[in-house]
Length: 92
Image (cartoon, one colour):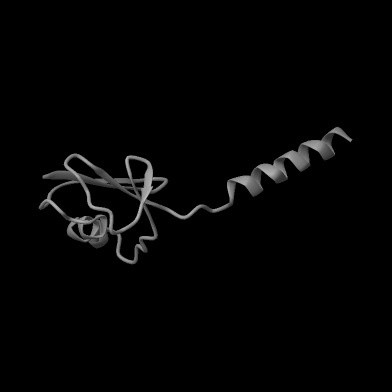
């Protein structure tokens, strides 16, 4: 079956199409792709399939796009909270 592996950096995107056997996990798909060779030292912590978070033991299906997510630099809720505080102080 055919699946994709996707990983994006601010200045470069990686997209691989692979033919893999039925019953393979997300972790196995990532290991079978050239991504880890192209990005040595990449630590895979958060993954998803079509923008839906999944675990590494998720069994992929025909046509799935496995996505490797980079860690967030800042918590979006905390960033928004600070923005609101700054806006309030500007109004004072």
